[in-house]
Structure formats: structure tokens, C-alpha cells
Length: 195
Image (cartoon, one colour):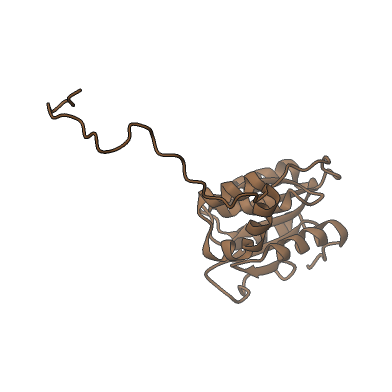
């Protein structure tokens, strides 16, 4: 049968479609794939995770079997969606419920509504909107002094001078372990109230 241009079709190739190429090793279980991804997790955070990889990591993680053990919450404030979702996924494995937003103004609205339940606020210095993470940290430590405030930044390795003294600073790339330690401290230690 001629094609639309009037030339006969090429009969040198088979009419059958090519078999799909198996890109995974035979017998590689989903658990092994998850273990391999977990082994590279720190490197993914350090390099900035493309959304398709972040989605893959979230899909490999099993949903928590048990309901949240407490009514306490973690608030993740990060303007980079992939980084925010990774932090939320990590914190969802703790005893804390997790909520996220991309700017300080939304975070303050959440704090006004849920402030007494928020045990941990994890915020980037650079945020969408007029307020930055340092201004957010100052407001939260003043208005909700019992919430553990953790600030992160990829632009500075040193603790910012204007960060409130009770706030914790973790430079980027942060390690998942560091965030989980801060979540544990938020649920087990009393936050020091500094005048």
C-alpha cells in the first residue's frame, strides 16, 4: 500500500513491532530498587532532585501502616516544591503530622490556626513572597516559643547572625538524618524559651 506521498512502503523491516527492552535486571524486587534509591538519597538531596526522581522515591515508599501517633504537627516552609515534598515525605515517617507551604505568609496563617499543635517548623531562608525564612523564624520564636524552629539555606554555610538564638540552623544540602533528629527533638525535648 503506498504512503501518503505515493511511494511504496519499505518492506525491508519486519511488520511486527520491536519487543520492549527490559531496563531492569531480571529478578530485581521492588524492595531492592527501594534500597538502591535510599542509598543514593543523600546525593539526590545534595544535587537537587528532579521532580521525576522525587516522584519515583515517593512511589517506592510504602504508605505508613499506622495512623499518626500524636496530634502534633511539622510545618515545612520551602519554595522549591521537590525539596518541600522530600522533607514532607521524610517527616511523614515520624510521629508528627505534616503540612507544607511555599511562603512565610501561608506559614503564619497555618500557625495562627494550628500553632499549639505545631512542634516543628522547618523553613528555608529563601521563600516565595515578601517575607524570608529569617523573618519567619523571628515571628515564630516570638509568638510560638514552644515550636522548634529549624532554618536551612543553600546560600550560606554559616549560621545567619540575625537568626533567633533558640532556632537551629542546618546548611543545605541537609541530610535526611539531621531533619529526623530535629523532629525527634521537637517531640521529646522542651524548646528553650529565650527572652
